[in-house]
Amino acid sequence: MDQLRLRLARDLDAHFPELVESMRHDLFNGLRRLHPNDAEDLTQEALIRAYRALCQYEPKRIRELNLRGWMWTIALNLGRNHARDRARRPLPAELHDTHPVMDPEPADSEAWQRRLNALGANQRRAVVLRHVAGLGYGEIAEATGRPEGTVKADVHRGLERLKTILEGES
Amino acid sequence: MNIGRDLESLRGSAPETTRTGALLGVGLMSGYSLYESPVGEVAVAFNIHGVAAVELAEQDLETRLEQRLGQAVVAAEPPPNWGDGINRAIELGRPGGLPLDFRRLTAFQRDVLQLTATIPSGEVRPYGWLAAQVGNPGAVRAVGSTMARNPVPLIVPCHRVVRSDGLIGNYSLGGPDRKWQLLTHEGAEPEKLELLASRGIRYVGSDTTKIFCHPSCRAARRITTAHRVEFRTSGNAHDAGYRECLVCRP
Image 1 (tube, rainbow over the protein chains, first blue to last red):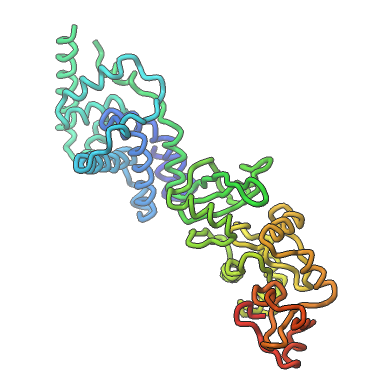
Image 2: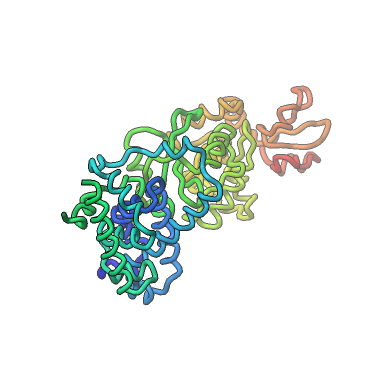
């Protein structure tokens, strides 16, 4: 990521495909847990917005970016706006069902989705970013605009809560 | 119980569309889609700026498109509002409102292609006419090479541009035979046009209106044989007291 920042600052068009390749799986995996029906579109759109923003940035600003944290700021904002728009004018039900089947999902994927949904929004987001998207605490702090200590507490409490839920299931 | 590890095991690969969609969406990749045309199946390539290329859908299509566009291509649907426009443009042989990506062309080449797009179906104009109309009568060869490099044949109808000696000439989208095929399809009667050209006739006029035209102009085709006059040069027509047709501007 450090090297990629420098390459993007030098020649955005030549190296943007590398950013896409290095980010799209994490973005998709994380977004799938936060916005289950729209992860594919949101991933694409977040990358497109990132490119447009990078076009406007001075090379110095690109070199100093916390790339993953910054990418996730864009993705989380998009997801939030998308969820809000969707709540205002819901899509017809059949459109929700037409989503293509992705990778063979782990058998307990749906169970985990249910458990994650039981968390509060901040805890769910922090846990997903940390353990599904693989971000560090600093990156999550950057992405969510919350202090690192708060983020750590969110992850910790989120995991505790999941543990309680799991124990309740057995 | 290791919840963190369980969550990590939920990770999978993102669908390929997250890559192609993002790269298409920023213009670093082009999409292409196949369409029926009078010369067979063609691929129309597009990007965020507009339609960028038309190629015959034959062997090595993707390689040819990638060489021409200088970037990777992927089979994809064009933006929903363009799809109908592409069909219509191919059918009518003019772009209509379809956005075209001419960023790689010079201002001269754009002017020439924009003018080419105004030549009506069923008619032809010589290279020299295009050169004169864009204000550079000496640039006949440059017009010829612009036609040869037209990125969007069929949509910008370079098949309606013929040699200055009146012969039908070459065609970038599959050679002269396809040019004949297209002109015949549009009712331009290329064999008649070449016959006229072989006799040195470049213009025809009407002795009742005293107006002269390109032979394929729709006004010229209404002239009855009895009143039809042939000219080798526009100078001859002027000397005989004829004026230019306002439609085909010979």
